[in-house]
Image (cartoon, rainbow, N blue to C red):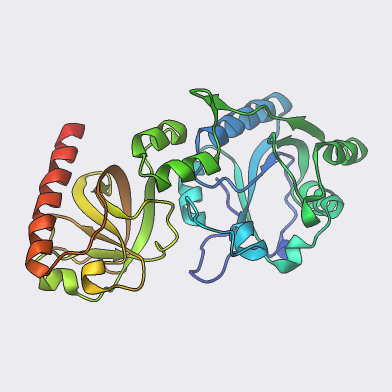
Length: 315
């Protein structure tokens, strides 16, 4: 994969649309949010690769950072399945180019016609464009399949409308996966993702309460908008370490901010500043307020045993 950027900062997404370099190779291209990179996205990428191979083109996925709803309707933005870095990891090896466009107010006002002509065709070398069944684009979502076909015919690129990908009678979508995760239906979400749901986030300094009561935790950055139900989970850290995770507000300590804390039984290293992968394996229980620290400690011991039992069942 040849991304158009090498590194993402925490506060800033790359590439402003007017800074996109023109590439020299001709491409087969698809545009979308690709949130979660689920089986529906995998189907689109597989179709894209097949069409590119037939036409001798390079494959490219064009996506956005941040999620457009964060800019256009922040009150409607509830959660996001994957960060830009996680999308990169999930798509690595499948495509030739991955292009992240910074979605800001300026970009949101670009007309559908200008987006197709200036960005898709001229700068990104599109000769074949695959679009999803529900694709809309451009200012106020004015662009649709027929406009894309008209412009493609004029400029010399093909446009194909992909059929919806279905599994178990459901159209696979990010909306469906978000709903299942929000209801802690991890096994069902896994069916539509084609994998366990996981995140990779950086460990940051917490308030030290876990260590003081005998259960040190890794506090993960940027997890307040996870699509998961609040509560306690059996998880795997970096694909191998059984652990227990709590997502919520820590009501026993009157917490005000939602956080994800991960306790790895028997682990004594320092993870601060490192990025760790957390696979969510099984929902154990709802978060609740305990009468005091001793009751909380007793429950954490039970949670740890439950999480270890879940991990042992995987081997």
